[in-house]
Image (tube, rainbow, N blue to C red; front, top):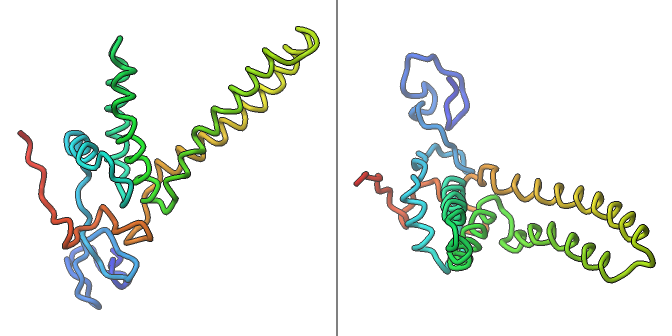
Length: 196
């Protein structure tokens, strides 16, 4: 087993590195080479609580688990007949803030979520252009089909890029947007989650 602090090979039976003395069961090494412990993944109730706690907070970072649990909540509440759209509008601000913090975790600006809107906007422009411009219906349908294929390919590419950012592991250690949310700090003491 390799030591997380110095990287030297150790036998499987020992608990501490023979060279550095570091514990061998610590999985995370921060940017300075010091082995640290990683906080456990947030649960669904914790993620929802954090989403509402940071309702208007567009600074800092958030983990993948917190983001995807929040996305699950929005999706499930959006499926409720007659009130789903009201819930989505009411939770639009915290959804944008959670997405912004998630992008910060991978080192991207929160403004990068505009790529998601950009993936949809050309489709609307082409549909409106097809309705209001064109000499004949055949010309309009043929050009509409051609543009829809191109826009579909661009939209799939932009959506894939955006989902990749949201799904990839965040940067280890602090980055320009704040400390690593997976690492315990003096500002965020580790409090184990206790079920109800």
